[in-house]
Amino acid sequence: MKPDLTDDNARWQAVRIRDAAMDGLFVYGVLSTRIFCRPSCPSRPARRESLVSLQTPEAAREGGFRACLRCRPDQPETWAERL
Image 1 (cartoon, rainbow, N blue to C red):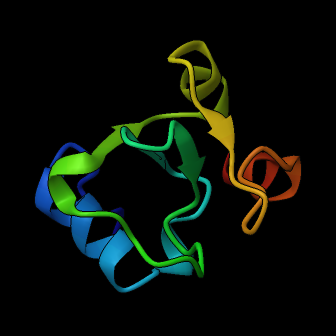
Image 2: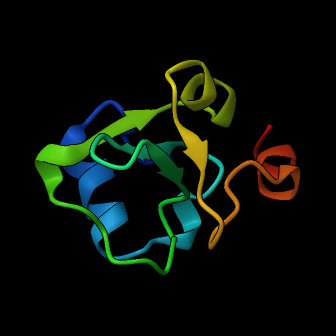
């Protein structure tokens, strides 16, 4: 069963628990730092109100975000597996 990625609460829960199963399905951007991450990123998540969910790393870059150096969300291995 696929997760409901249209639900903000489901995406927030994935970020909060660092759900690796959600990697490749979306990325999240942090408005205060302009960095985007995978849901499983080991860094401390920002406050919920500072997060924005994005469908792909390309969409994040177009939105002015740069890739996290810890989780490397722009590396293709996970994204290729989900297509």
